[in-house]
Structures are given as structure tokens and as C-alpha cells.
Length: 126
Image (tube, rainbow, N blue to C red; front, side):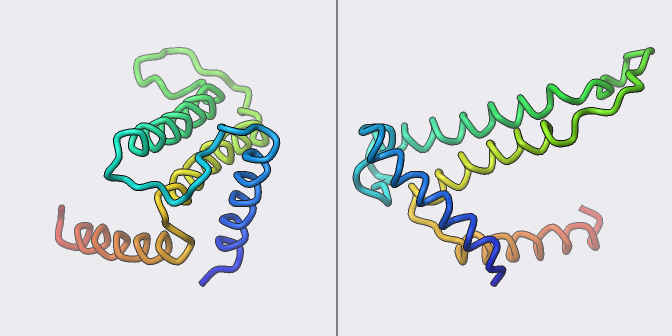
């Protein structure tokens, strides 16, 4: 298990705890959420959408993605700003995982399992 992944989960949990203390109501008092409940599902959806929004902010730094555009921007995107937006997205996705009751081990195992599936698909001409 990668200790950096565990540390990322720990840092995000610390952030959630601090947010609860300094901004009551910003995160539910009890985690993990009961995903059978409507309110819990709404919280998960909100966290996921915030992560997606941050990914869109990262994509705003890319200027040459339109296949039909005839002119190109020669200036490279600001790598630090691009990466910062991706980190913002990851933070929301880590919050979603924590709120849903998953930890770094769960994520890593699911990642490995999915990796095997997509590698098999690649080899089989999926």
C-alpha cells in the first residue's frame, strides 16, 4: 500500500474535521453517511459535482483542444495552476470517498481490480 495515498486520505480527513469545527454544518456530523438516505445521496452528489467543477476549471487552462480550431495558442498552460485545479478536484473526490465510508485501501483495491479489467479489454480488442 502506498503510504502517500494513506497520507492524502488522512490530510483530507483532517480538513473535514477542521471544517466541522470552524464551519459547523459544512460537513455532516456523522460519517460515513448512510447511503440509503436521500439526504446522504444529495451530499454525495454535491461533493462529486464540486469535484467535476474543479476539473472543468483545470480544463479552462487548456486552449488547443478544439479539433476544428485553425489557430493555435503557442503559450503553454500554467502547469502549477492546472495541477492545483486537479488537486482541488481530488480533494472533493477524497471527501466523497470518506463520506461514503471508503478508505485508501478500498480505493487502491478497486483501482487494481479496474486496471485488470481495462488491461484485459485492451488485450481482447474491446
